[in-house]
Image 1 (cartoon, rainbow, N blue to C red):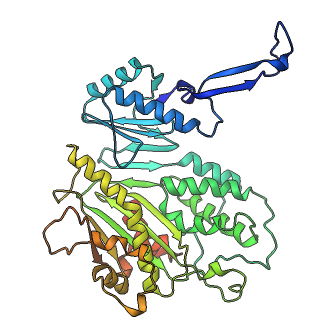
Image 2 (image 1 turned 60 degrees about the vertical axis):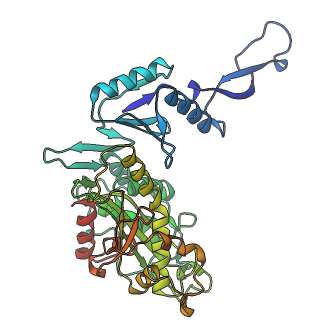
Length: 427
């Protein structure tokens, strides 16, 4: 790990900037109101501060031989090493410790004030532990403990739940219910849960995103749903992701729930109940590296359309990952893959969506689907045909019961939830 000492002010100010004299400053001659301070460094608080810092750091890294990835501006490459930046926290990795030490020395020589934090045992609040069997365990016990403290669920006698959300009822706006009594800070807990879900707990994605929709005006039912998530976390506090590198494939699992929030009683005042939700997870070498649970912005008119929109949006999101892996492969980095270039298998369980994706022909019943959802069809090849680097995708049928992305779209029964959680998260 590499950290920067006062990161933003290391860069010079990008333009002449001045500030009033702070309280406590005195001037020997004239009126204090006639004097200003000139700001010479890039200070925190300006809207462009982050961009100025990045451009400064990028120029310094390029001056010592780093190149910037074409597909991710926060990934820098030099020799056999890779440098990944997250604002001012960063990871420098590679197979040769001497090469990494030389890079650190070069960074300091060009004027970057940095400290090395040792190995990657903890990064951005995520505990990373390498086990003797070669697996990596990613957990966030401190964040989970903070959430449980906010929810007042730290006591040992607190009952736990086996799933993150109830399957018996749909969480909607509940306009006739009393407001949530704010015995915990709803928005703060939702913010923590969103960070937890995106970092190490994809099993929370659907439940957290459903609760987050009502943060502006939570009702009693929404508070109860957040408490349910907390009780689920209470029983799985030491869990997260178990990464066990195996195989060498890139697989995308996509699923959608057609109008899963439909509530005829409030449909007249809340059209969002007709929206469908899709979810996807991208697996690399058997490990999840990207996932999402999203409410679709447009109203799908059928299950097939909801699934196809989800398929299109998921591919749109994962294409940069495919291109980044291809770039690393071309530059000689040891990216495991079966093909000469990186190829992604996409798994879909809806026959209609599969037919539209694999057979691009005009159909009266689906002609209303916007052209923007068809963009990926030119990237699909027949799996039986020779490899074509211009077509890095192939679409495959998967049984609904085996579709792990299902738990990103709806609340599932205990057995099915645990089956998909085991496949994606390893426990």
